[in-house]
Amino acid sequence: MLSRLGDTLLVLFGVVSLVFFLSAVIPGDPVDVMLGEHASSADREALRHSLGLDRPLAARWAGYLQALARGDMGRSLVHKRPVRALIAERLPATLEMAVAAFGVVLLIAFPLGLLAAQYPGRLPDRLAALFALAGQSIPNFWLGPMLVLLFSIQLGWLPVSGNRAPGSLVLPALTLGTSMAAISMRMLRASLLEVAGEAYLRTARAKGLGPARVLLRHALPNALLPVITLLGLQLGGLLSGAVITEVVFAWPGIGSLLIDAISQRDYPVIQGVVLVIALIYIVINLATDLLAQWLDPRTREGRAA
Image (cartoon, rainbow, N blue to C red):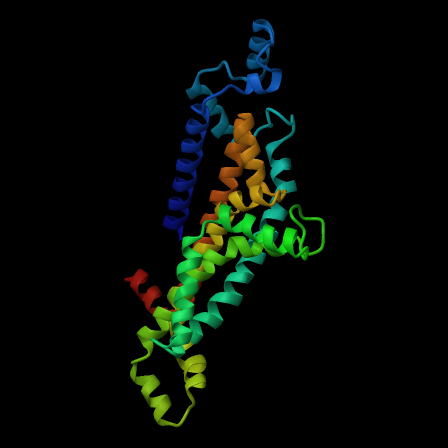
């Protein structure tokens, strides 16, 4: 556990440092965004000095790491507010959409995966494969507007954007969860077919159990380990994928906050949002790893050896 904690801290240090230096080389100057291009040189230099942007890059990096060690993410250059407060306001909306999208993944992937594994090579399997191909091929920035055109503009069933109207979560969740549902469905199907020839399943069939009961009671629990691992990775990936989806649907989460910060050259907000996303991703991966060890004792024995 200590070695895993050390690896986690090392990864976070690398992410923080990389994002800090990449933010520093983004074309443009936050002073131009804040004052405009026609401001006087004296005003520009005074603002740059007050923000600490005239300090050497290495000194700014060291100061940022020291502030992070104290739990301080800095202040937004544009909003003049603590970055932690801005993220705390926006994070619940992102988590809400990520959880809803994860629900879409489960509702689509498991029924289709089970159906495809129950009838391999037949019509249900082919239809599921067609959905998987379409789901993985269609990007979110195209699928989202198409869903808006159909369900919001043409049919008028759902709101176009925002998160205040009833049903506003449906289209973002579908947009974000469809591609990941396709991947999970294919993994579940492959895992079920891999265990289909095991001896304990033949024994269950010989005892007279029906195909559906054999699949759900005996095959599914033993085929879940790789699926759970993939779902854990996808749950973390939902946060990074939410950036595009939030922009498409004007969803007030940390994804849209990140895009606004990049356009405004708001370095502390960029660094803070990426750090939070990386931290959540690492925590989810750690939890997935622990769950996999609990479900499969062989992984615990392998690590202990």
